[in-house]
Image (cartoon, rainbow over all chains, first blue to last red; front, top):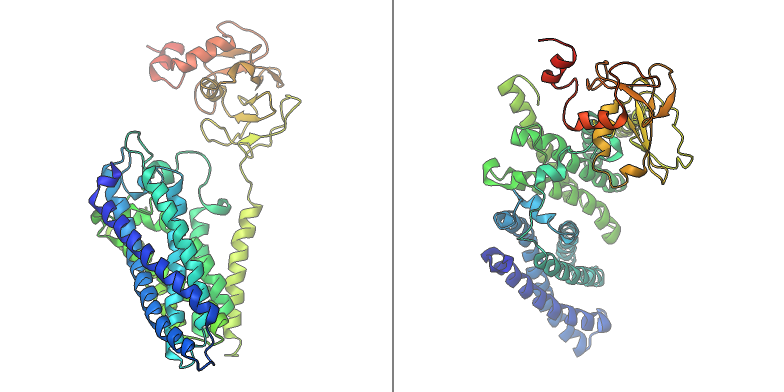
Length: 320
Length: 168
């Protein structure tokens, strides 16, 4: 039944097409890696360079498309909630079987590596001697295998979406229905918020002073704390309901699709912060732009989230 | 000084983060289930540390508290005998549970099945069932107490409270 949905058909078709293109690229990449010698002036090397140009173009195009495909995947899942009994948003559909959460988590990780590859490719093409050529091809091989795993998970997930038995809605999944605290380390919301703003402070300093290692760890910790802060605190201000805890409902039209901006800026801010450190390690160069982008997106994220709380307080004179 | 400024900020932030975790660690952690009570004896209750599995309230007083021990040694705690009665009703192992209640008259842990329950005591959840070792007039046994809890015939029900207290 799920497979009759237009959005699912489009998604599977695009995924299959991209996988086909990536497979072609993968076969060529293996061939190029085997015989690549940039210092050689042979015809073989000349042909390899010509072939590599086309292959890199295919990879760039397909991986670029993968970036657009993640928001589309989330949109598709959100749309499917009408077919899954009990689901009120993407949370119910994602949790309708055991594969959903792993799939989404894998997709985000792949997106991170894809972003890294695109930046590495950009700096490699800028240099005349392709200094990171082999590194980016190895990175592509890693991404390719992860995409194969993702495609298998995609199929398992979509096949196993239940349409005949009720699933839990987001209130049951994220809500405080039991007596255990869902926030890690048994933190209270106030402590979580303290941690959230302090970690933002660390990302700010690491970006301003360009401390690579600090940028890596502070952004990873910030991403972790920000996820829980949005679900268990800021989200309640987006919904203007203290009992509504969900990372997905904010992606819906009722909330002006604000979730796309919230999660998008968080992803980009932490991505650039983490990538700044990783690329410094890979390329041996400090890329100032990355720190600037990280600072801008993290700040946009924190301002946007905090403004919900502030505006609510100005309008109502109380906090939730 | 300007050179050290970022390091000072980092140090301050790190101190803030560590303080949050240390303060969390020093706070009392609630315990809902104790594992390994293989002797099936009542455990000494640390007040404010154990949490009632049914209502989620911390066990603040020994009076009216109860413990249920499964054959494998898992022990659950309750701040009100009524909570225990509700909790155990749908448990598959309810007939194998060893249940202890704190007797108000002898101030000791006694077998819940041998205890007698008053109907109008002040209890944390206002159900009114106080456990006693010695029987008095109008006291009921465990099975009757459990039945009254499941039928909502207890002090938390305004209709029955009036009836039990003789208010008309």
